[in-house]
Each structure stands twice: as C-alpha cells, then as structure tokens.
Length: 632
Ligand code: C2E
Ligand code: MG
Ligand code: MG
Image 1 (tube, rainbow, N blue to C red):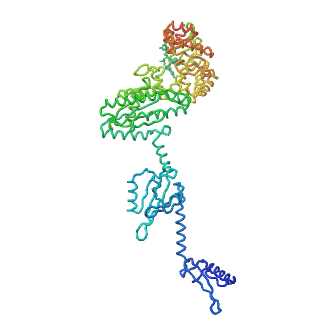
Image 2: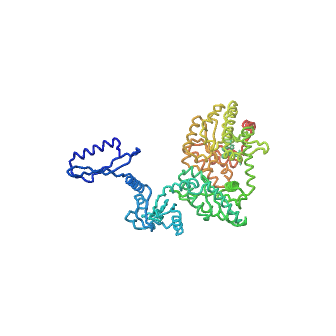
C-alpha cells in the first residue's frame, strides 16, 4: 500500500511521535488516515498500531481497516437525521400505526410534544371533518401503491382545525413486509388563505364581499342552464340606489361605503339560498332569481314580490355612525327562460327597466317591456343629432328680458334653442339633461358662453343696449371642469365682452360638490368682474352656511314658487323668506316665471323688485329682444 503525500508525511510524523512518547504497550491506539489504492483512487482507512516484544525485540503490529462503508453509513445517518428535522412535520409509526417518533416541525405544527404523542396513533389529530370512507380510501391506496398524499384537515392541540398536505409512505423490509409508516405533514393554512384571497379578489367585490360582475355572469349562465332543463323562468333585477352620489358628496365616502355594505347585507338577506346577489360597482346591484314558476305571469308575480320586499328593506333607516340615513332604490326587472335571451341583453333589459323606475319618481320597480328599447333608440338618435347641432349651425340663443320696477329692462337671460332640421325647435328641458349625461354639455356650454359674450360686445357699442347684462346658465358639470375659469377668461378676452355685464347662473346642485373648489372658482371670476346668480333657488337643498360663504350677487326665486304664489300660502311664505334671506345676506333677488300682474304686485309687496317672465316677455330672438328694449 502506498501512501500519497502529504499523507505519507503525516504517517511518518505519527510514528515518530509514537516512538518518542516512550509509552510502552499502548494497545488500540488508532488513527484515521486517507490511503490510496493501486489504481490511484483514495479511500479512508483506520490505522492501528501496537507494539509487542518477542525475545526482547520490539515489534510493531499495524492493523489497517477500510472504513469507507462505515463512513458512508454515518453520512447517511447524518443526512437522514437532518432531513428528519426539516421544515416539514414528520411522524414515524410502526405497522400498527403507533407513533414512534416525531420531529420538531411536527411539534410546532400540532402543538404536541413527543411525550404526548409517542405511543398514540395519529387518530389523535383527527378534526372530524372527514368521514370513515375518506380514511378507508387513504389506507386502501397505501396498501396498493405504498403511498398516499392529499389534503387533510387536522386539529391542533389547542383545538384549532387547519389544512395540511399529508404524504404517507410505507417503509418495507427486504421481505416486502411493512415495517414503518412515515408521514410528512405540511401546514398549508397560509397557502390556503392565499388561494382564498385570490379567489376573493377575482370573483368578489372587496367592499361588500358580494359576487362581482365576473361571478355574476357565471351564476347567471348556470341559472339559465338550470332553467333550460326544468322549463322554469328566472329573473334579473337591476337595483340602483337613489341619490347615492349626493350622500357620497355630502357625507363623505366612508359613509357611502357603510351604506353600500348595509345594502349588500339587506339584499343578501332578502333572497333565497340559491339566488345570487352581486355588486356591479358603484351603487349598482344585481339579483338573479332562479327556478321561478313555469308560466311567465306567475314568475312575474314572484319577481314582483321579491322586488317589493327589497324596496321595503332598502327603505328602512340605515345607522351610519352618528346619523340615521334614509335611502331608497330604483329597480328594473326582466324575466328569462333558458338561453332564449343572451346574458348581455338580459342585463341591458333590466338596466333599461331600472332607468324607467328612475324617471318615474324612483323608489319603485318596473319590468322591462320592448317599448323601452324604442325610447333608447330615440335617445341615441337625439345624442347623435345634438353632436351635429353643436358643430353645425343648429343652435341659437334667445334672450328673455329681466326687468325692474314697472318694466325697465336691465338685462336678459340667454336661453339656448335647438333648431332641429326635422323636429323643429327642441326644448332645452329635453336636450340639456341629455347633454349633461353625455358630456356634450361642455362644447355646448362653450358655444353658449361665446355667443352671449359676442352679443354683449356688440351691444356695448349701441347706446340703448350698452347697459344690459346677460345671464348665462352654467350647469354643474361645466363648472366642475378644472379649466372652467380659464375658459371663461379666454372667451371674455377673445370677444372683448365687459365682464361686469356677464352674470353666470349656477344651480344649487353644484353645492354638493367640493364647496371649497366652488368658492375658489367663483372668487377667481368675481375678481375679474363676473357676477353670479343662484338659479332655481329654493328647490335644492342649499345649506345656509354654504350660501353665506359663496361670493354670490343674486338669488333667483324659482318659478315653481311664483306660479302659485297667490294660491298656495306655503309658496308665498317661501318667496317672502327668500327675499328676506337675500336682504340679510346682502344679495339682490329676482323672481322668474312671473306671468301675471297680480304675481308681480305680490312679489313687489314682498320686497322683490326684479322680475323675469311671460308677463313681460317670452324669450326672444336677438332682433325681437332689441326691439323690445327700445320699445319700453
Ligand atoms: P332656467 O334657467 O330656470 O330658465 C328659465 C326657464 O323658464 C326657461 O325655459 C324660460 O323659457 C322659462 N320661463 C321664463 N319665463 C317663464 C314664465 O313666465 N312661465 C313659464 N312657465 N316659464 C318661463 P327654457 O328656455 O325652456 O329652459 C329650461 C331650462 O333649460 C333652463 O331653466 C335652464 O336650466 C336650461 N337651459 C336653457 N338654456 C341653457 C343653457 O344655455 N345652458 C344650460 N346649462 N342650461 C340651459
Ligand atoms: Mg336660468
Ligand atoms: Mg330657473
């Protein structure tokens, strides 16, 4: 046997050491060194040296054992021990299932110590969530394939039930007889939670935990398939809260969120187990009712009953922190049977029916009927037409005189008119709301303001017209435009109109917005000389504290109070109160919709001396208006 350097050197040093130590008869001293085989490979050996005397002569007896095998076995044991103490819980049982060993990770997962479980069987861990058949199948698999793995719910020592991934392997001797079972237990609570969370995010609305649109579509499809088989009707109810935006704007989004959560709970409690309540977003909810009656009429009755029930529960007071809030909803319903109508169309139908409820006083339920589609088609046509009207020359302004005292004209309100090529004059009451919904109000408002300012600039050089002011209606949406101030200033500059002659009519609906922003914009324009009037005053819900902070010039008493001012004592009182309010705030007041002399006289006796209305003149085209001014 040759010993490679540096092992040779180590060997020689060892022997030298031994000799110099002078110890006699040391037996069994051994040392592990590395040796080299003839073929050049190395291997570990245990080298033992003893000395003996024979006839006074000293002999060394060297024993050399190849310890490769022992080394390997030791390494394997170390690996096995390390592996056993891995992150996964490990349980070793005998063939009868009696626990022999557990590792630290298992103690951590289960909460048991080794003393508590060794000698017991894993039945100790049962959660009770799986039946006997489950365990029977598991053992059958181990018996036939030698292993089983799957998800199991177990119980920790503290009673908590948790999911784990369990792998059981049978350990067999050379004879094929099972000697042990080894189970690895992986706590998958966190993974399960993550899975649930992903599912929750993908299919449920995070605020209300109701199914979202994606899941709704899926459920609706299932309901249709079920109805197809059974021949029963189902129904879709589209639910939209009334005035939700106002709540959000006035009381804040926190309260808005609270309301939505309460609505979700109430809706979920109003339907049967198999029905679906989903939130589409915002304040829109959809309820799908499955397996109703086989006749359309009966199914409609059932749907109506559910709808009425929903209206009733949504009408109950909502405790929103420190306030009790009342709300209502508008519902649209439509029936379906099997796949006769596409999902998309069903939702559209229910939405249309809901819209009908909105436009007929809210807090109600309407069923879809095909005529509703005609209305929609007309609306779409009107929208396209309006777009063209703004670009082409179909809009024009009429001017309605504003007078003081006995009839002296101080100015006019500019009122937009649409000369429709086929329909003739379309009322702004019809197209302004449409323009607001479609965003067309922005280009439309721009056109109105520009035309009115151009007119102001023209009148400025006419001695008998130069003193006139022009009031221009500005809808809340236009005012909300972040560039509103810039746009008005640009138009004033470009037309050369005198800002002091321009009065913008705002409505109270603006005040549900960010009031600070409203004040900022008004102040910026006011600094340029532009005046402000609050239109339709008394019909909204202005808080007086807001009113005081707005840089207004004028309140405009709404025509609804003027109409019955001589008949309805309430209206008379309101008109008088508005006059008093304006006086106390240092504002002018004007009454609109004055149609008769007695109305004017009553207003005058109440302290209101500025008027607008048919009694003096209807809104007139420019030429007619100029004639009117010169005549009086
Ligand atoms: P408004 O600003 O309150 O305008 C007054 C409305 O009352 C006008 O209706 C006017 O013609 C009508 N009116 C005037 N005097 C009398 C009267 O003695 N009796 C009755 N019954 N009605 C009278 P119009 O022109 O149909 O406008 C309706 C609404 O459309 C306006 O109400 C205003 O809110 C909106 N509007 C009109 N033009 C514009 C515009 O250029 N921009 C915006 N954003 N809205 C406009
Ligand atoms: Mg107005
Ligand atoms: Mg008005």
